Image (tube, rainbow, N blue to C red; front, top):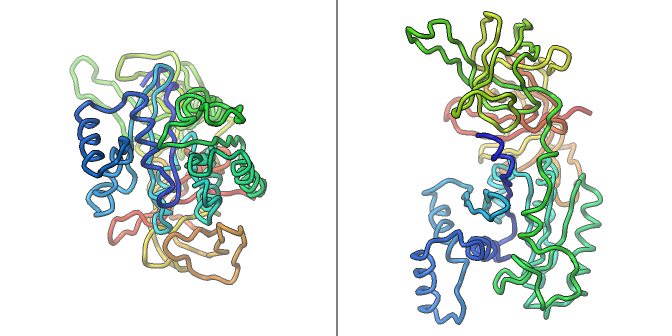
Length: 420
C-alpha cells in the first residue's frame, strides 16, 4: 500500500428507511460506470417488468440488502468505485434504529459521512442520531444530502428550512466540516454534475465534493504509533538473524534512522529499515501496512507498541470511555469482558456506568445503571494489563477499542476513550 492509498476516500452513508440511500449509491455506481453491463441489463429488465419508465438504480444495492437482512452476509455492505480523481469505498449502513451498531461499524473508519434526509419529511429522529454518531466517531467531514427534491418541486425554501434545522442541531455537536447538498438520486440532480433544475443552488455536486474534499490532513501525522501485529522471523539460511515487526501504521511518520521506544518494555533503539510488499521505503505513514526492522536486539512481540521516546502513549489500566452497546443482553456494572485495543488484548472489568446518553436530545440520564442494545453511554473500565492508548479525539486508531464476550467470542461493544 504505497502513496496511492492517499487517493482513497472512505465514506459511510446513513439515512432512514426509504430516504433513497440505495438509489443514491446505485446512481453513483451507474454514473461513474462502476457497474457491469450484465448487472445493468438485469436491472433494466426488472424495472421494465415492474412497469417502471426509468431504470430503478436502487435494485443495484437492494439485492445485497435482502441478503443482509436475512442474516446471510455481514451487517455493513461495502461497495467500491473510482473516478479519474479518486478511489472510493462506500460503507452502506442500514437505517433502522435497531441497526445503530452497524452504523458505528461503518463510520468508525470513514473519512466522511453522507446523511440522507427526505425533502418531504425533513429532519427526523434518525437524522439526528446519525449526525450525533458521526461526531462521536470523529468522522472529519459530514454531508447532509437533502434527497427527493423533485418531489417538492425543487423548492429552495424547503431546502433552506431543512438546512437551517440541521445547522442549528449541528451547532450543539462538534462538526468540523459540514456541507449541505440538495439532490434527486432518482433523476441524478446534483449527483455528478450541477442540476439545471436547481439554479439557485451554488455549491458543488455531491461527487465533485467527494472527489475534492481534503482528507490527507485529517490523519494524525504527529504522534508515531505502530502497534505490532506479528513478528516475522524467516528461518532461511541466507538471513538467519532477520527479525521484522509487521503491522499497520496507526499514526505519525516512520523513517529509517528514527529513534523509537518499544512499549511496554520502555527500551529505545533506532529503525534499521522499513519494508512493504513492493520493497523498502524511505518513510511510512497511515494507513500503510509495513514491516519495521529495528537496530537493537530487543524482545518485541505482538501487542507491543512502537512510538517516539518523547511522545509515547501513557500506559493505562483505568479507562473512561463512551461505548455503543451492541447486543441484547444489557451491560451491567461488574461485568467482565475482553478488550481488544489495536493489536493488544486484555480482560476488562466494568467498574461503573456513569450515564446513558439520549442521542436525540443529548440529555445525560444519570439514573441508569445498565446499557441496552444500541444504547450509548459513558463507562469506566479497569483492564488486567496496560493498554497504550490516546484520547479518541486526538487519535482514532489508538483511542478506539472493542469489547468481546469471552463465552461467545462475539463483539458486544465499540468504545472511544475520552479524557476530560
